[in-house]
Image (cartoon, rainbow, N blue to C red; front, top):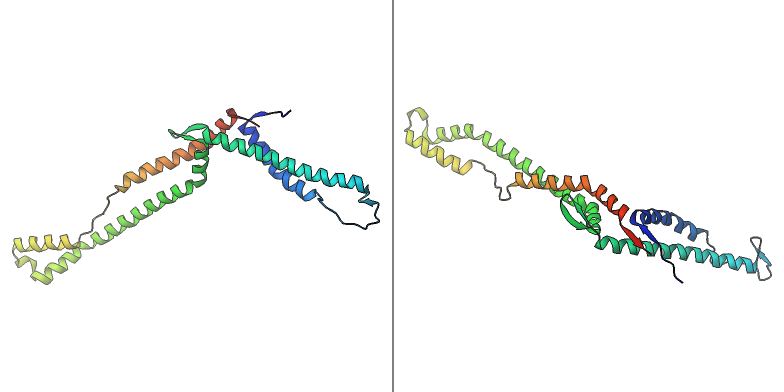
Length: 209
């Protein structure tokens, strides 16, 4: 008769951690096979029959631990695929929350790159436009000579023409300030909540193996 066991995800994860330590130890300690003289009566102080039993026991122990781990892992994976949680106002499966937590660095990279590109664009805008007044004066002098003797209309016309050709503006179809604000909220809210939400879910969600 097959017996079943019900436990919380939290307990299952704790056992998985223990199994991950025990499995390599069980495999390393098992002999699996041996070589000795045909005339040998004992191996490592044991009769051949008893030593064969230790080989079988070592193999059975390693396999049993592996099978236990696989059953636990399968049950956890299946539970995570259907159990839903709410993180930062967004409903998602536990599996999705775990995946997003592990890949949040991509979202952080997007955010930091947007911030960096915006800073570079604004710095270039400021630098270029700050030089315009002196460049404009040089341009007007080259075109009109002494500005004081030039007609007001000519000065205005050439000033407008110069500014239209040389003034820098931001090309901002994304409205980047707003995008950055949205992504900062999105990333920080998720990171602030996900661990607590997953811990709470793992404590109350059960699996049966």
